[in-house]
Image 1 (cartoon, helix red, strand yellow):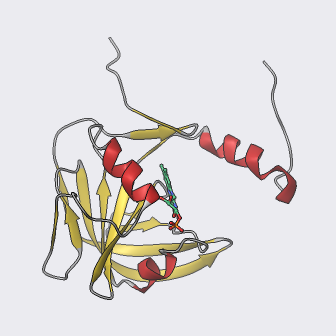
Image 2 (cartoon, rainbow, N blue to C red):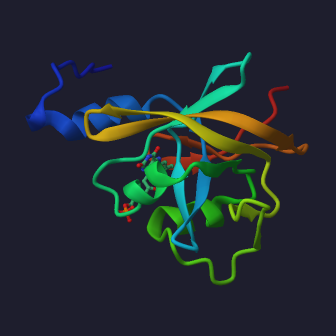
Length: 166
Ligand SMILES: Cc1cc2nc3c(=O)[nH]c(=O)nc-3n(C[C@H](O)[C@H](O)[C@H](O)COP(=O)(O)O)c2cc1C
């Protein structure tokens, strides 16, 4: 087995991304309302930070066309994708403003709520940090919801899921 080892720099970003891709994650879609229009982004940088108080974070890329929409938003929702929601994740990785054919409705704050997700965290931004080419958005969870079912996973550039160990 050959191991690739290197000091991350501008010349080996592809290998660095491949190393990071070995860490499997769940998949979320973050939604917000910006200038009255709904906006969404597929993101796997979601993490729980604190249980008491309930704080979470996610990281929008500064180069994303949607970055400012998300860092401006005081309220937003983080939707955890179920294993049957790959199409939704792929869609919002490509386009963050096309809600045609998407099953959603606005909550009392105007935040787009996507139907049928595995879990959802309704968030209020409490801190914003610059971190290299990404921003870190820290939020208080105002409400959480979840349903039974398996989650959509992402690892080494591929979507997948869990199978039951016997
Ligand atoms: C599984 C997956 C996870 C992603 N996670 C993030 C993320 O955490 N932060 C981010 O800025 N972009 C993330 N992206 C990329 C965005 O979904 C989107 O493709 C990118 O922002 C496109 O650039 P645009 O906003 O300029 O159109 C992820 C994409 C995929 C497929």
